[in-house]
Length: 486
Ligand SMILES: NC(=O)CC[C@H](N)C(=O)O
Image (tube, rainbow, N blue to C red; front, side, top):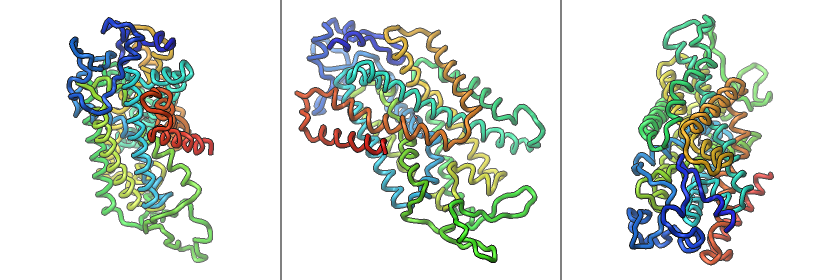
């Protein structure tokens, strides 16, 4: 119990609280007596965590949320949907449709299950913060591991979003203004544009005190992604394969699959249509290994789940699980459609970043320009949501017992954004970011931490180690650790 007492003053969404303060009960009694879960689901949803003097109904005391169910779905959907969607068609081209669908389903189901574990563990601890679950399970090392993984993962994600702004925004402006690429105007320089967008759009949203306020921008961001998806589907019927690469001197060049060996090119120079314009159901190549990290990255939203839960109105585990089920299911469908139609447009020619592939064929097509604008708007509006848990993690790691302070809140946001801007200005390419971050922090946050925290936190009396779910979880942890080592 010792570490629990010293760390009970938590900062969730800027609000510092001693859990014991609210209820005037000794901390120890509270931690022992009150398991905040309602495993049977017998309590009415709206009374489960509300203060009630007569009943000893369990409740969270860290924050009283005001965000509606729908807005929470938007926020979680926005947290899931980011640049990950742009890499999925490439992943499909390296696995084939069937294998991709299988892996996508597996990652989506595991991702949902680990959200369930996080919610259950946070129900037992009574605190809705990922790092605090780490602390409860392993003390300070657990808290640091969770905090560092969240920080790395989300900084990686935000860098990839602003990298899209850097690479796409100048092209969109140039095309709409019909400006000359070499005119040297400042508004055609990606680096200036990233700084400008960060200052004018991201920063004001990032310094909001609560995530709930971002529901509207999240809704807008998701509609931009729906527009992206509809356009990808439409383009499949609009771009005819085999296609010609756009060149400035108007001489068409056939796109040759990057993986094609020299033997596929006949002596007379013509290219054999070896899967170039026909879909593969199942395939394995040197790039297939990237699939799991790409999918894991695309489904990460675990650092945002607990902050969103914190702000949910009349919260209950069941309600939050419902929010997560809806968001993950919608994203699952959108991811599959985007990957499928992206792949069926370009087949083996699809690049690691889907938008680049369109640009190669039709760089000045108005629809593609609008799609680029939509995607860069969507990811820009995701940055503040993803920044939120990083700020919480930093506050919990560096200032664990401090109350909310506007100056600290703003300074952390400004520092983080400056760091990300620097990274983006020097980052080599988007796949590098996916690869490094996706291969390390994303699997930890999705597969490993929720499982090990759950095993350590849920009391043995409640669920013995021999219970079905604990056996399942420990098997799963073993497999995840092995595959990570591999
Ligand atoms: N918190 C996060 O890292 C979100 C990443 C998000 N799933 C994406 O695809 O971009």
